[in-house]
Image: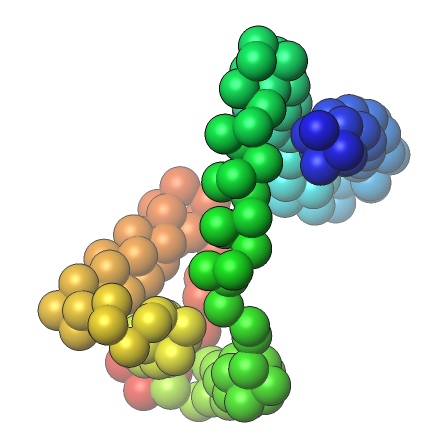
Length: 168
């Protein structure tokens, strides 16, 4: 029950934060005549935070109503079981993730967005996946499709160039 109340407070805070962030992004000076200016990304992030926070709030309220309906014993038992099953984050995976990010940023201008992003996403998914859950074909397809879609969205819709690198 305490966890659910914290979730409600957190989601309400994030909703308020996203509204303030959206309002503050209106003060960013537009330096271009195009529809996509410097205020676009902060507004997009604020809208994303708002939508996810509303879902978080709705889910927290549903859990609160469900725990008051006489199912508290079952929920408490499930919580105890979940705590035992939680896996600790190894320091090695944290350092490997930071290393991958540094390598990604360093190689991005040299190799280019498409190749570097595919390799980074694949390596990150492989690193973070449980050894029993590593599905290399799915990781590869996800990495390639995500990188290509993001590249073409930035190039065709936003008219922004990402580093081409060795692809020219």
